[in-house]
Length: 460
Image (cartoon, rainbow, N blue to C red):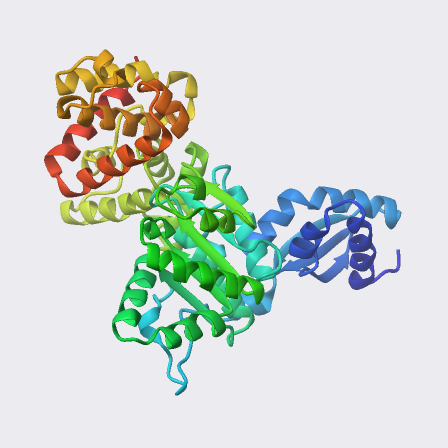
């Protein structure tokens, strides 16, 4: 076979178009460039590590089969990151919209975290769809999924993915006007513009001077009628101009209370992707990546990383926080990092057998068990939690039981409502929010909920 790498790849790419959906080819294979072809191995360059891993797992085997058919020879197809990309300094800035005088409107934006890139995002079953969608958006802003709506619990990586999109876009084109902000900041901007009578300037800035609009925590828009009105028109203007919109929330659009139906429908126009709790293998991979990033591979043994992954499962953020806490503890105690030390340092974080419960659904407690434990701890009856009664002595433990059913069992809102006397999903949402707010502001209440959670975390 006397083909160059470029010729071989051209023929394989043509063959792949007949086997794969067009958006898949555009997103994952079109950006690939041939590097080398020798000794039965075709080396291809992908834009970043995320694309390398995705193409290796999803497309290498198919491309090898196509090589046998189209080129008449067996080829091993491998991917690696483009060298010029790896040598480029990672962007740690963003381009804000500019005012008429050419000055950046920095007050309307948040800075980007240089650690939040696709290279540092660990893909697993719980975030595969969201990760792939984010990567596709970064490769073709405004073309593939618009808007991209990512939802999931706190600390699972929504913001990481959103900022990874911004970094990737800016790496490709530093002149892109990327606006990253929280929904609360948008709300404050609307209020300030109304008070200062500068709404014309506000609308021009947001609707005509932005290429990529990234908004964190859009659930904070709930009940804010004036802000929702402005957000609706901003969304429409950007979408019609084919500008990319990326949104995050702690729940899907249909479950955000007080959100206008016209916004709900627009949030669902593109791709709605969730990020769930990582399983055990994923948690271990996340911890290894964190250790790698901070050059701690030799400091923290694998058995310690596994121990942490088995006993801490609430969020990626907490997993990474455990590494920092453990190293600080080891430094203060002048001791080597071991499983015993980790058990001592993270005593307040770990829940015995919680990981086993998460990774083996058969051992999960039932909703009846949740109701029984919460009822006993609050001095009421399980029947009372399922009743229609709305007295305070029952309302609080009922809300806690709903919260734990959602968190530990992953029950849908409708299922929770049915298990607690046929309540509708808006009541369930209110209950979950109420418990989260109380836990954030009342330490005694938080400890009480945590004790119930720990009891339920043990397999019975």
